[in-house]
Length: 319
Image 1 (cartoon, helix red, strand yellow):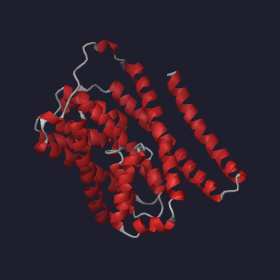
Image 2 (cartoon, one colour):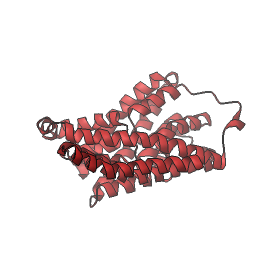
Image 3 (cartoon, helix red, strand yellow):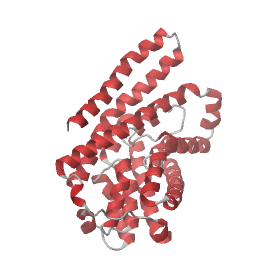
Image 4 (cartoon, one colour):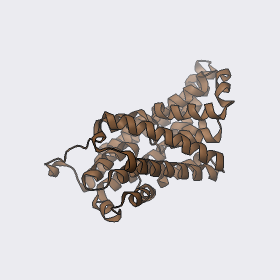
């Protein structure tokens, strides 16, 4: 517990120090661009840290204290019915992206249909209450953005679950073997502390990188080049959908990054928030290591496409 508290305090302290010293350093260097970079960076990082901490606490608590047999008892055996229920479970049983892959793997080993487990894998980090509250704060006075994120993300998770149930093949999915020495795994409070420490410090690093990348993008990219994309709703949406894969921002904080990307359409920002929690470089690596490269390539590619289409349709209809 001490290590988790120290790690969380250290990350918050770093963000605070950066927010104070950054503008001072920028003024000393007499570079307005650097000052603007620090402003965007600290705004994204400092706003995102509390929600990142809250999200990882909830995720660690669920992983440590909610038995996995709960899923097998609640989900019907029919995959077509189990998929939307598993997808909707992401609202009440949230988890971060890093934890969703091992949780889905564990559910499959315990008898949950792969299609349902994959739907939960996509929905848990995308539509949980922490993420939705963070989105409402990042986009004040825009409740349609929160609703759009909920609908588009849930639709993507359910569609991908149904697609796997219909077209997925067992040889594409490599499940890890069950460990024999289960007693060596931490349980209860120890599991909670271990999960909190790992998820918060790991996701916090990606938050800092995402904030830096967003600030760099806002400052370094010439406005003339940006106008090429922002002038086209299709190009801007595809660009942010691609950036979501590369930036690897955690779902608890990606709304603040999206809100900082000024000049882009609401639908493009929606695509950034829908794609990010489901398809990014770290998730592809986790899926490849857990389920095999054949699965990761096919599933990630299909998920990106479905998420883009879902964001486009919901953005056109709602935003």
